[in-house]
Image 1 (cartoon, rainbow, N blue to C red):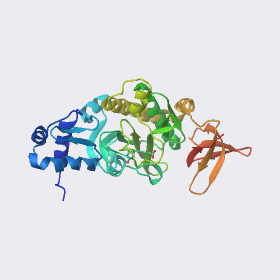
Image 2: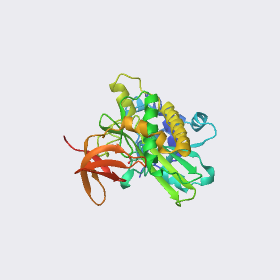
Image 3: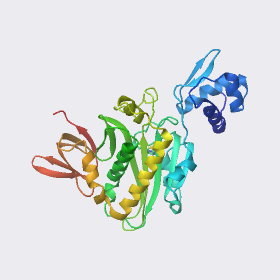
Image 4: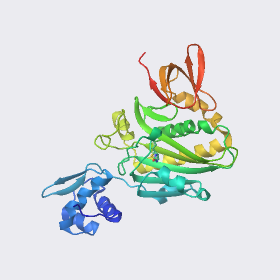
Length: 326
Ligand code: BTN
């Protein structure tokens, strides 16, 4: 049976390995506060968080790629006054914040690793340790927002703007809120809310952005995907530090939620249109009940997709968009 490993031991081991260089077994054991004899089995357990470690006899161990852990204090400085927490591991940052007291909003929660990261439509969101960004923000609107259904689109705009600022090239949006580049998924947004129509409304805005995930870590993803570092490397741009990207994303999301609270989606509609990857293209929208094909004609002020089919423009409120071959 594999040796038990506490989260604290695992983090000490990781911090000792974080630079991506080779480290001898002796040095690692000392840094992690465990015996040399126990080390190999403990290193094996790093795989529980989907961390890839290489071992070489007589040399030691190294991570397949260097690792940069997030720092809550640094992220807190990016948005003064915002409560920010970073957990090394949790089931899902969305699930945690849905259970958190609304009195603590606005609050942001990052996780380095999610054991049950949630995607849209009940899918699993790949969340290997410190490879990408997994963030949720709890936000309480004092009044029910007039254009709440368009909030996912505004958040998509925020993600695209943050990625622009981080010099990640070619980012576009696919309705309702897929963040894509080069036809591949770069990020996703999952907004969950509780509250009653007409009263105060609390949302949890979850964002996952692929930053430096390896092909092996992404093996379970069943759609074309990309990452910030992959895109930057392809375009000759130096890969952004994950910590810097996290700070930019947090600030941009906070600004967007504040502006949405004041002015709704109208303020974001032109920016969304400028990123719209499906406009005037032949698409099929699949919902639980049916599939409808037509030409995408942008979105309305409530964030509904306008789909022209047989001379009629339909307003689609939910579904999965796929492009059809021309
Ligand atoms: C999608 O399917 O496109 C949405 C993915 C949303 C993933 C993020 S990661 C942070 C937050 N916590 C979760 O469990 N899901 C969201």
